Image 1 (tube, rainbow, N blue to C red):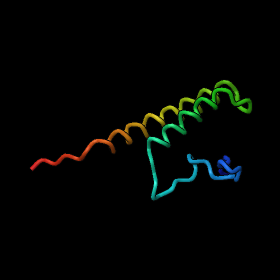
Image 2: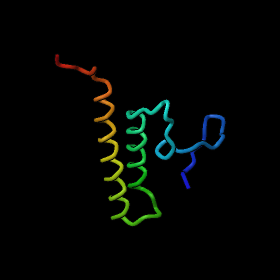
Image 3: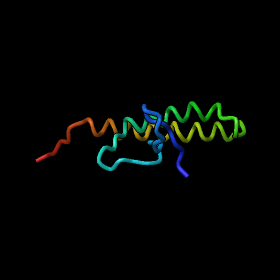
Image 4: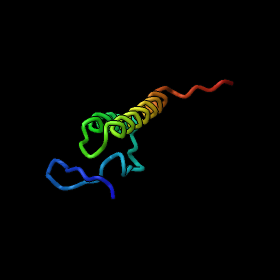
Length: 81
C-alpha cells in the first residue's frame, strides 16, 4: 500500500514517489522527493542501521539518476544535418 501524505487542506494524497501523474511528470521534483526520503531513511526507527544506510543509498542513487534526466530535459535537442 502506498504511503500517504496530506495536502494543504489536510486531505490525504498519494506520495509522489509512488503515484506519478503521467501528464505532469517532473524528474526534478521526484529527485527532490527522493532526497527527502533519503534523509528520513537515516533516522527511521523501524529499521536496523545497515538497512537504514542501504535505503538512504538507494534513494540518493535514484535522486542522482532523476537529476541527470532533469538536466537532459533542460538542454535543447540538437540534430546534425
